Image 1 (cartoon, rainbow, N blue to C red):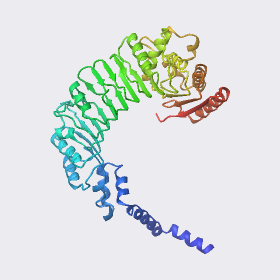
Image 2: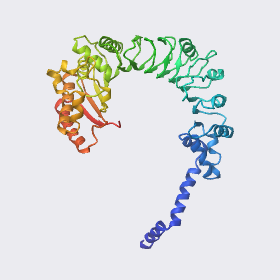
Image 3: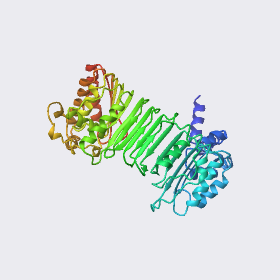
Image 4: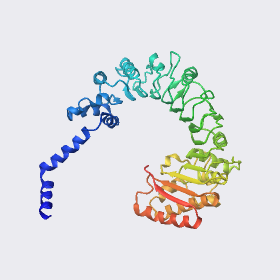
Length: 458
């Protein structure tokens, strides 16, 4: 027995033995079926996938049949992209991602997109970078006539998106538009050409006129996301959607005309220079339209609008939400709004608070000056400037969290679970976090509510 152990020990120390082990590991990967190797390579950019061809003869042609191509100008020049596509042998592409600037590549972009469409691509992502702000790019007609694309993601750096033909995306289920410019006719053309659309997303898009988003004929649409679009007044008619994420500027009137099928909503108002009355009205109207959702998420600025309404004595709608998520900081500008939400949520079972101490989100001015209402219940909550000064003080931070949790427990009578996600500069000190966990455990036992303290990645 002893001699056998000695021989094993010598083999482990033998460099040749370790080399053989590495070879066996490499052979194990190379012996995988082609489908598995294609799946693995599909997670890396195409230029890196091509480099695997130098590993061995087994790997020489693997990348050419991977179902996904991810091409960026920062990895491959135009000539390299042409050579790559010429060497590609798979008859079908599942996903094709292209990121390219307009500099000296406009016509070639069309040919690269046509290549993907000719291989019946299902997931197409195109990012056009216009560093000169020429706004001169337009897609060819064949782009709007693809019958294979199921997911389409476009970023156009505010180039006009104007189809010159009737759009026919018969298989398209997910459409995401970022930094596109659209007119009413162009958008109507796009919508009418997507009969099975399930999700629609706008990020930082510009609409040339007022935006009336009439989705009443999109019978399959279930998800709608609108984030910081530029237009005149916004009206949303979307009777079939189940999920709405909305981030709108407060100086542009936004009206939710019909969102009667909503089960989940994520709402916030990005505050600009609007008057307090408009700000408050928009916040209350959004809340009223989302009163029947099961899961409701509210952001910092919308909470400030609700705070304004609370301080003015304006009535709040009764909510049916069983899960409420607030993304904010614990400052006076939002506490009254949160308190009113809790009082008007008779079915609430779970509350989650996400806070990361990025205080540029919070404003204690512009009609929400805490000096006007710093009294009674709200005196325990600091201004944003005071929060900065207390970050280095463990006792002050603990007191603030305890005050928030006690306020919640006092106003949410049906609550079963409260989750606090704390990030940013809050808890880099592990010892401080452990002390807070002990405090939370004590409050949880005392009130028969499950209170969970977590550290977020932000």
